[in-house]
Length: 450
Length: 53
Image (tube, rainbow over all chains, first blue to last red; front, side, top):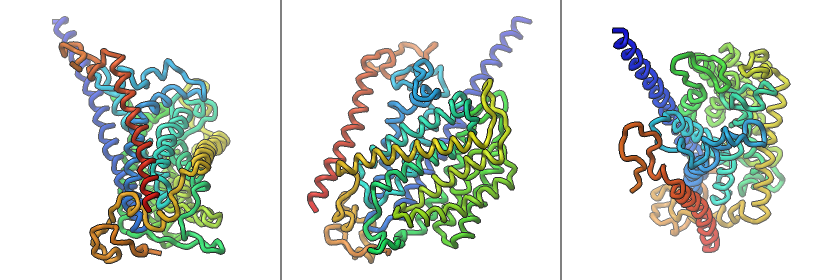
């Protein structure tokens, strides 16, 4: 009888463990699936924000960023995350499971976790490339863009994540860095990397008058932009859920192993989101910015999603929604042409989110032995470091590309329209703007807007 | 040919050629080659497109 009970107990234990493993797979599978909507959104957003004559190349560029980040993240991105948490000296033992030839890096009946975690990280990685993608539309060379996307998506951000979005990351241990929703390691890095590229890339033809006055180049399809942004927001719910660690038999924990609930994320994501929309609407009355405000709000609260009192999240989102358009105008005055506001929305709101977490969430203890608690100085130092980690490589690499003459398309191609030059097909062959042509060679017309 | 297992009993890593590091390395190099090659081809396609203007 006792032996039978022991056998049953062992079988039950095995069944629970298997169910837990499968639940984990299911959870991250669907987080990843929802995150794909981020890319559907960026695709619509970016194509809509382009002028009609550049629509398809904007889409091609966006899709290729997604496609090239996936294999390169397999080749070396996952290893960087696992191995580089100490700084610049790799831990080869820890990184072994991320080598592309490791037995964990493929179908394995003894490992239900690696593939789905890798997939979630890949979608984070592709998001960084998509953030840059919109900023540089209509004039960057696709080949150079792909290289920049791979460096950002499979290299830089994941190095930052290993440092600051990892339970043993040195930023977490030494500085008390807290950023559960990746406001810094994704949004600051991507936003400021994009800024570094934009400085060298230069503005679109016609963006500034001869006297330097900015000229508004309107999206050719604002409804597509708005729907794209809404899809990005839907995708962010998968993204943020993917930032939580499913424990199976215990409470959820965040990436730093601190206990949390998904309910906390639900409260604060929604409150931040609404604050951002309202803040941007209040500042601009502009539908483009209003919808971008949702992202501003989410990013502004992302670092402390797990701990904020929801009205604080609302206020932080509101402030983020107000400062992003101001930052956008300031960049424009500096001669920076950021076509979709990627730098203010992701970079500036990311900085605000990290600093705000230091202001409002100081004192929360870390889990690792001897690790610093969350503190304002640590958050500010981390934000400065992350700005540099994005801006400097973005600037230097794009400067090299510019010096080699491979960063930007020729002016004649830009004026003619990249769809005509590169894909040989118009986005809207029956459009009244293009005429009833079915062949782009029949000749382009003036841009739809501006 | 590609199966590393002869039975599903106690199978763990079962992906194609999991038991052959040399072939894993070969296919990894092929995949890297595709990525690098397509970027290079894109660069050449752009040059041709711009020259055709």
